[in-house]
Length: 343
Figure 1 (cartoon, one colour):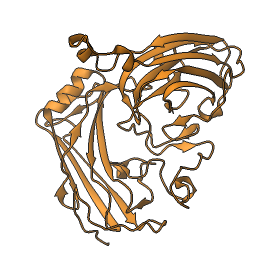
Figure 2: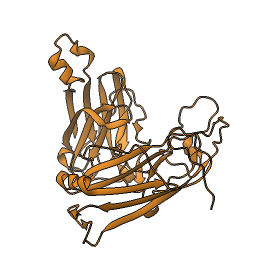
Figure 3: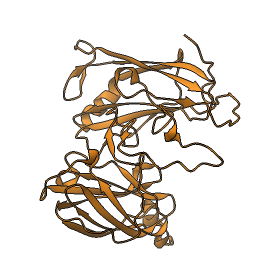
């Protein structure tokens, strides 16, 4: 079957526009015109419209109406600007075959480049699986949160809403680099998002940070989820984190808003720390400790004083290597100047 819609996004700086009638509203609007048809093994999607600078189109398909149920594609980014028209053919995750007449929904967003959570528009479009039609405009490879179809991952959600260390069915396209630099994905052990480190990676299969270089920006993160927004807030009010890197408390922890992630029925909060680049090659260790001032619940278990889960202890080890591209690096990390240690 096929689904078509023309949607005008909300206006960027909407509050400004309410108070300043002199603003030219046409300078701040973006549009998505979409048409998609979904069948047993794939979805064919046509997109066109107009996009303001700094924003892109994101979309993801689900196996229930209204953006509910399980994700059946990765969260995909389409890099567009000004007037755009593109078509994409997307296989279902794991190259699965789905039954005809089953429900499908596609959640479309207009969000900041490289940040699908910073949106100015989001809407789910519902349909049922039927016949796939031919692409209506120039067929292009889509830009995903890592190109290709995800068939496995660590299962850890990242602050961007994707999955940490996804495993792809097909090899990604080479990254565009200046000079004769090899594709990141041609390097064995290199993660899809190098430098993104889950602070509790020691306890999660598939969450190892992989091969890291002194040119990588090291970004540490962890998260908490619960059945309701109120339960996450209760955690925020009582959580006492002690996160150290080689014995030093990590600085400038950023806490996200409480939010839901497409594909998850829970509410989430993310903690992130940007530790910069230019790290001295060697091994580094993160110590992660969490306690609570008062007992809390995540809707599934109890945590805190007097419960079966009074504390959570974890951590992560990672190693930084000299980059293989002969890029000169002065090893003077500006955020947390640590020396590496060896076992």
